[in-house]
Image (tube, rainbow, N blue to C red; front, side):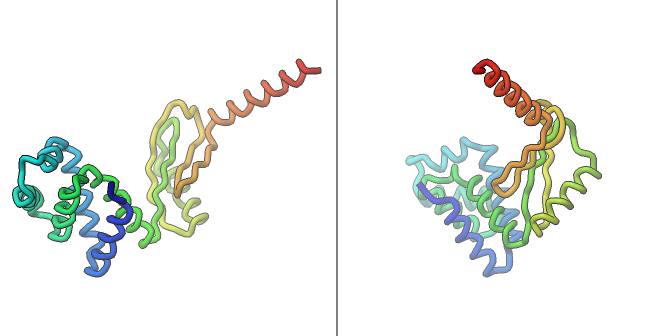
Amino acid sequence: MIDTKEYAEALFLLAQERGAIGALLSDLEAAAAALKEAPDYISLLDSPALSGEQKDALIDEAFACLDTDLRSFLKILCKKHALYTIARTADAFRALCDEAMGIIRAEAITAVPLSDVQSERLKARLAAQTGKQVILKNTVDASVLGGVKLRYMGKQLDASLKSRLDAIGSALQGAALGMENQ
């Protein structure tokens, strides 16, 4: 099994050397999306019925519009029977790009969609706390009831109404149990 982070780092260093980080990210995401839409193509490229040269030719044909280094990378993944890891590699590459550009990606989970003003305020607060540019994604989940759950940089802050109600319920249960033991 390959380490997608190591592969992403190698691609990132290559792109950095060439001054083409953004272009390679775009191509990598395009390749990952295309392969996600065509799982049978991955199976075909994984088939022992095709020679290595045939597989390379198929990759060159299907991804002719993409960066040559990326096509070489896809061929390496194909030889290692690891094309299925392309999405994880793209995610790891995007994380390296974000880190290099001082960007964090955050997700705000709310019961209703955030307004533009709310979204901008949340991004500004998070940017002030982290010192980084914030890309915010708003996910709507009615079970939140109200408030917001915020996920970023491996952290989760829960200021949702549901979590507050759950905490009150737990406190009341604890108080009720305490009264029974008296």
